[in-house]
Image 1 (cartoon, rainbow, N blue to C red):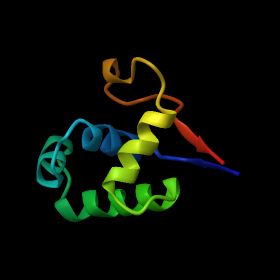
Image 2 (tube, rainbow, N blue to C red):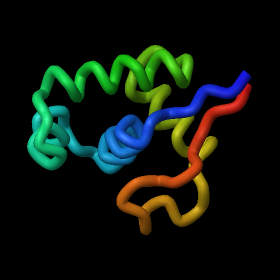
Image 3 (cartoon, helix red, strand yellow):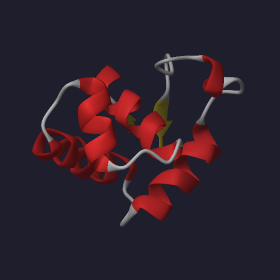
Image 4 (cartoon, rainbow, N blue to C red):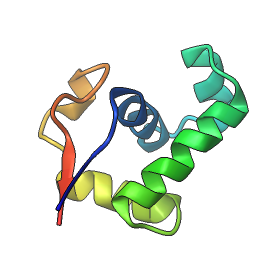
Length: 80
């Protein structure tokens, strides 16, 4: 089964991994805090993790090398 994050979910995940808070992400992306919380919940579900620590662990397990150089990671998906 393949679960793919949307472009926006990948962008939010990258910002979470880069230590941005929910309010900071909302401001940067010009979205509401509630919208960011929704994206976070969807990311947790899709990656099948329980919390942000699991989200970060999964990110580093699956991220492409050089992800820091991209505004949004391309072609990043989770296979299980």
